[in-house]
Image 1 (tube, rainbow, N blue to C red):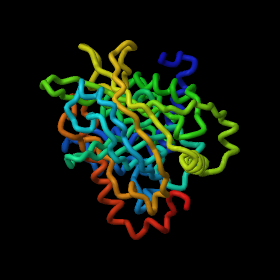
Image 2 (image 1 turned 45 degrees about the horizontal axis):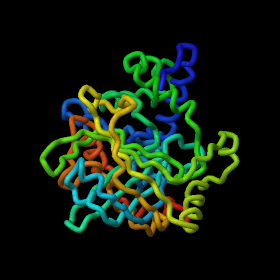
Image 3 (image 1 turned 60 degrees about the vertical axis):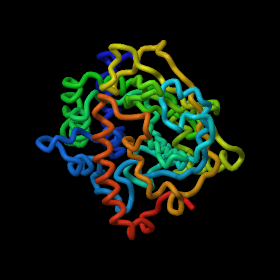
Length: 349
């Protein structure tokens, strides 16, 4: 996607500041570089909080969500890339979570630019594959250090040059600004394409490694919704819509794995890989039942992207390990605050 022209740069920076700062930083997934001399998980999690502070008992980001159960229907094609049992042809149970990139569990659905999905797939060999994906096609910045700097810049509401100065050092954010300003909103979680963005390594049965990214491509036809129409919808329309849609019939996404070629930026999730890369459709994610989060099976799951089965491991991408450390801090805090959870709402009953 092209970067904004000079005439649109200021508007893009304002939009980015709103998306990042106003939503409590919609990219908790990128969690930051955890060098003890520069940044700790505790500092990173603190930076994700809105000005009023975190909502006790809830995830520190992507706080608004709704659970689903279903299955991953593997077609066997993934075995060409990974020996993981999850790719052997068959059906494997899934506990998932649709969510918004906001720190407020009572946020207005139509105001959130970033939508996400958490997925946990279990296999008979006792292993799990957990993933946390979002709908942008790339991250706003190239490194965990830059992500933390972005949080700091977007939080400086009294400094009109903060985001401009940040963008001068991190020009890659222009592509995200273009996406945030032009990509259509859909009317349903079921119509979203969710992307891993981070790179991982699949190891096949012969011991060969393949660096990959993956996406969940919806079977449902996307219906664009204007901002004016979004503003007219209820605060919880996404949760209400997906509940009704799944009650009428299971919803499906094809898991498409893209394989990197020599020279592709595997450690930089702000850069999309070129078109024409090999892709393999490895199976179908099926959402069969929606459950409100307060009583749902996803409530206590930490969708740590480093929980991986044998045959999948992290690559040179630094983000997954950073995300894992920050997720752990968030998980510990919200579970310690469990008594406060019911008093702060959550998914509508």
